[in-house]
Image 1: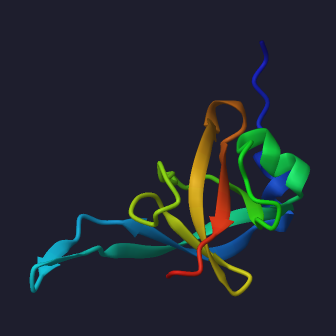
Image 2: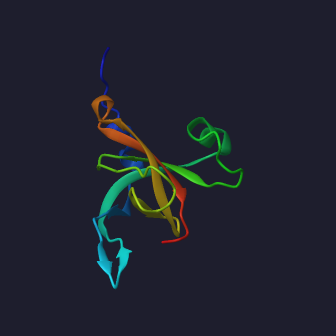
Length: 121
């Protein structure tokens, strides 16, 4: 199987977006306070329509907004939508919670991530 470098196809669509990665956090006055480390990454971002969302999440609510993120940067997905794990992306005036990552680096230098809006952050 041939491996093709598709990264040049994305270059003219790259934008810079803030990525907030989960850090360990600490207890403050007896309550767990999470912390996030922030950095800017280059990414290509595309909106997902509902039929695409259902391919990844069969139980997604009809009004869910989701995006696909293509980037060379490592991204960590959360295991739930509770906001306690996984990375957050700032894009289009919203915070997006990364829920799934497909590592495509071996086939083109990019990974693809899926994120939902999370208005709690």
